[in-house]
Image 1 (tube, rainbow, N blue to C red):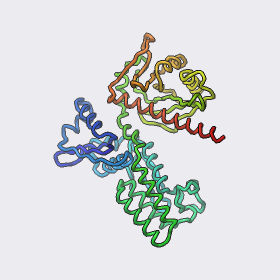
Image 2 (image 1 turned 180 degrees about the vertical axis):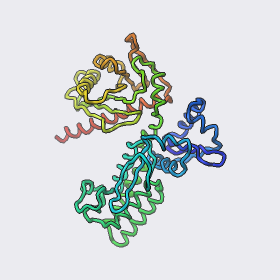
Image 3 (image 1 turned 90 degrees about the horizontal axis):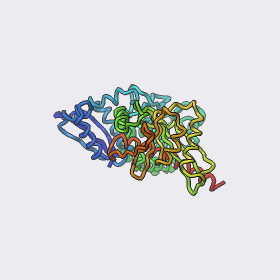
Image 4 (image 1 turned 45 degrees about the vertical axis):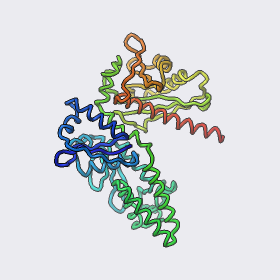
Length: 400
């Protein structure tokens, strides 16, 4: 179950607050890291006198709850999150604009901190889907999101400024993590609107409630709870554990490639990009492949050839292939010699790469190892992205 944990001192003051999709596993990692005196865990564990656990229903709830607890208690050993340049906050501006922004330094009326701007923007995307909000409420023309039914309409006068201010109250309750209060408020608003026979408002509030319940029941945010593991230390560990002859520095830019096909039809390829262990979705790319008749390894080579035609794209520090030795052997032949390449096969989660003698190394790391978990996360994200694109292409050809 996902949840939040708090290591507290003798006085009950939080020393460190964290979140995980698997509390037992995450706490075991802290205890393991505690043996290394150079880690943060070693310092807060020796001072901890109590451990507080709070299980929640969803990954999204864990993300928001952790952010609000850190903001409230400001634990000393969460300072890396508060001070890190990647830490991000959601802020809502004052009237009349009420603008939503993601910032790196806290000001007033903020929600966070979140580990990265990507996570903060994902939270805002969920807010827009559930409630809708407007970035230009003083305009006299309907905004883009109003046409997508993701803006309540202060921009074109559908609701007044006073009504929009009340609307924002629910968003603020959501960002504060008070989900039970929010559900109770929405139920009251539905009943009140129905009593006044304002059925359009009642339906809107009912849809918001359903969307909220769906979001809180979803576990599609599990990957975000794994991201704190992808620290510089984990990337440094990759150098030591793999002993890859070309991997000399922590790989700041990781590119992972996958392909998807069904009966050799609608074949597609995809690349996902991770910067410092976190996904940069703006740099994800898709490849439409006209044929897969020559098999998966040749198709993977075709995708890589097309990628290498883009010297304007940043150079990867590490390339991961979703596949085994066949993909590794055929793709490695065309990769620039200074770029390390590994393949990650699903069957036994084996890492494959060439050593200095051009012999293939087959490496199996412990399944709980943080380096393997990071590579699995990157590989699974590439698979998700490729599969999503493949399904889209299948639908297009089905209805063409």
